Image (cartoon, rainbow, N blue to C red):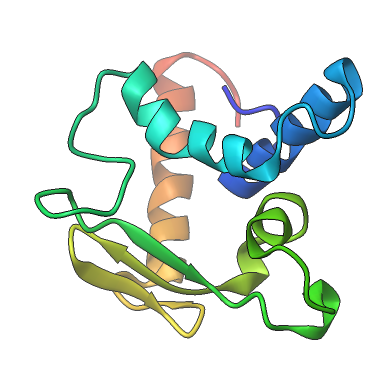
Length: 134
């Protein structure tokens, strides 16, 4: 279960890095290590050999962030910007299995309103089956 109600992998990444710094001290877990834990390290922990890095034969699941925006400047380490400061507003493109599903920050593969409507319907159905009120 997520630690935040936003269901945000970026928030989870930031919180993990900040909690580690609080627990063990600043600099003990650099941004590069936090990012590795969230990508390749997570895949390794789950025994997944075909995800978590960019190389031939791997699935093309990629996220392109725009870190060249006023709230993330001036300069600095781009990995630290991603781990500690970036959020979903900075996502420009996403590819899943090689197919672009987000372009210029907008979903291209699905209608977000249709997804929300389906989610509401499914939630109501689950609650009804469980004998709970919505």
